[in-house]
Length: 327
Image (tube, rainbow, N blue to C red):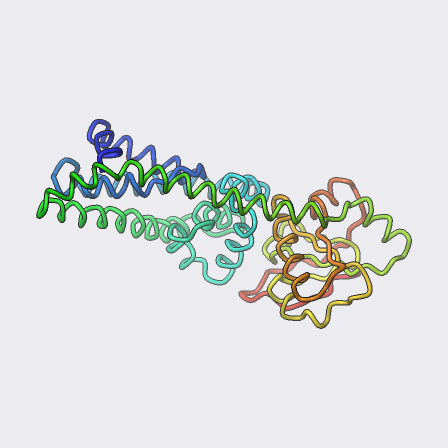
């Protein structure tokens, strides 16, 4: 583990704290190799296991608390930015909101082990009115489990090196290349996935102006609001005549979707990611006239087009399968 360990020995807990902090703020710079290396060094008494655990834990709590208050203040706008940084725009917002809506405490405790959930969970907690004390309690447990498990894994490896020092020569020879290849592969896979989703999106999406002309002309358009119920609490409006339904329920009720008219999907994800993914799913199920709305709800609202008000409500633990929210 020569690549990260000599740097860790030189800069110690400050490097560990900074690296974890940067990753938890949403920058895709994996902290796992550094935590594993710190655990291995603790076996040689070159770093203190408890001090490394404290440094990682404090870094997580500082970053997560910051995102909690940012989410509390700016709501879903900050989620859009974080999704772009995470390189997982196809699932991150929806995945976090569904998990958080069903089991808040458990979500925070496991968030750091789930790609696309770790950075989004704190601002979602703040956005949806979770008490800071409750958030800090569950988030601290999750951070302790994540940092601790990686340090323990590194410690076990360090103990193995003490029993068989010849392993160090083999690891020193190949660890740098393996680490670099792993990080490069991580980025390449996610960038490729993003490009494929966006390519399909561009080919099928509908301009807001075109939808407005269709509605003004009295065309019968089937509009579907794919936003999570949590997003409707601070902004209780929808497009005229829209049906509110989750992507999962929409696919399950495919026989109820009309085939003789355009089916327009919209959300608030970056690049209409949820709408595009749902559109591709419906295409596979035989619905051809399905199109995501470019810019989604936010672009329709920005253009000042008419919207229907819906009564304020608190979302239940389970999303209703399909709800019409026309006037």
